[in-house]
Length: 211
Image (cartoon, rainbow, N blue to C red; front, side, top):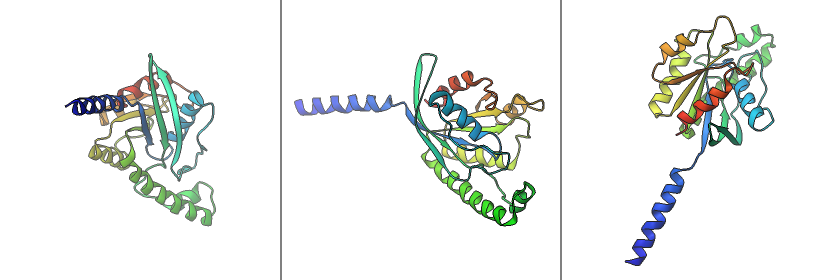
């Protein structure tokens, strides 16, 4: 009887302990050039003092999964610890000629297209390991794209908590309302990862999806 009592206590204690675990795996997803790596770099600079990856105007600069471990943020008296996963831009079609038009040689363009295709496949696979996802969208572009709908559809199918970031609000063509209208079921925050606009509210919003 005493054994069962002690055993039940231990199970309750460790069950409560693990329920309070605040270290999660947080993924950055979105179409190419939406600003995922720029946001990742801003987060890492704010809390670690170092950047995460290279940023470029050429699509699919990030073609591999990048992970920055043990980022600890504080906001409103709360703390959150996570591994940040920066993923390649999701695309439904990757054409090497797009890279040629961006200034790459045909050989380099074909190589990049192959790497980018593999990166997209890997990014989708990694969704199964995510505790929460930040979807980064370019607020100057039409949110009703096939790529965006594919990303959101994959997240809904897996029931993964989502925060949508409307990036590039510093630009004149930006429209947060269009993105909110497209995906009203999700919490949304408008930021400029490049300029650092609204980053404090962004950090506050992370606690809403990382429950």
